[in-house]
Image (cartoon, rainbow, N blue to C red; front, side, top):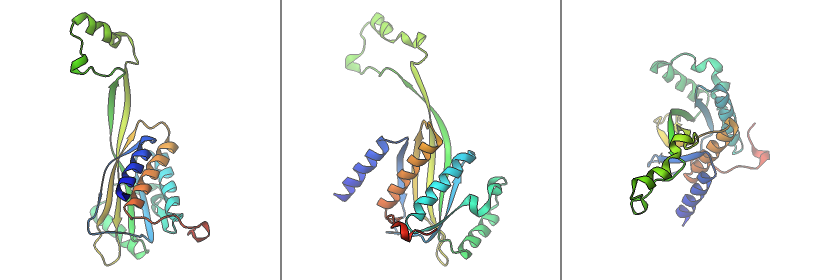
Length: 218
């Protein structure tokens, strides 16, 4: 019953949002995970979106009593200006574990896809036009109506939760594949995306519930 309720809630959440959960994977060897200090990284060329995303999701972790630091706070704006070698990334991980971090939440936009839909639905076979003149008459707006085709963009994003716990394997804990449908504003899109990610993480027992304000880590 709980699983059915969770699926229903996810469906409701997605139907009212610009974001859709396409799929997600959880490490079968991990039942629950409670990070104590997490680094939040947003990988996108849109600096404004990156700043808003990291700040907003940091607030979500802080409200749950979890220490959170954004990549902008940790490394500054110049972090992604130069490509990092594997050895450099290994050293970054070592520094993070030495500084008490046990997890990384890494979000990236993988690609953008243009979609085109028709303002009219296709006819099914039973209702299809049997004569040319009917068919032509019905669909001739294709020539004249510039709004007959609706174009929109779909952004394919991934969010991954990694364990970098000291003395343990640095493994992937969870990954979610999320589509952002025709975003209209950065703020609304960031809010929708984070609400969906946090909801799924809670359902997967990979983040705890919010704590009273007096217990929030500042």
